[in-house]
Amino acid sequence: LRQRGEKSALAREMSDLQQEFVRVCGEGASPRVVEEGWAAVRGLLEQRDKLANLASCAQAPASFGAQFAAVAYLTGLRLGEPTPVERLVRNAGISVKDFFGSVEEQHLRLHPGEPIPEALR
Image (tube, rainbow, N blue to C red):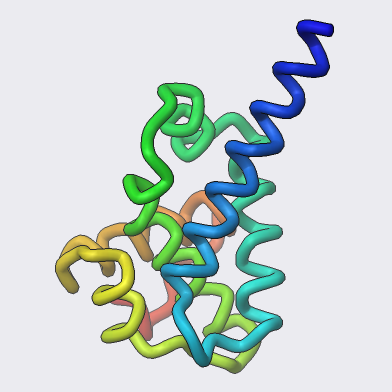
């Protein structure tokens, strides 16, 4: 019974995080960007990286704003369906400087060993 309770708590937490990711992407975001971006976030969480550490500390979903905005941006670029930076920054409640710092950080996590594209420098 305890394991079922832990699993349902984890499912609720993942649902809350997914809702926050969708909120950060904003209205008008490509469904492909939202779907594939969320898959990338889940992959990062499963790798037990920084995002997983934030999640394990029971951080509020809103504390993921910069990371979520960066993943959405990188996913959009990869798919050729970029999400406007202004929308991501506004929805995440972060500065443009923090946004691009997170973009660089998440690029290194999502694509280890790949150089940062010139467009992101």
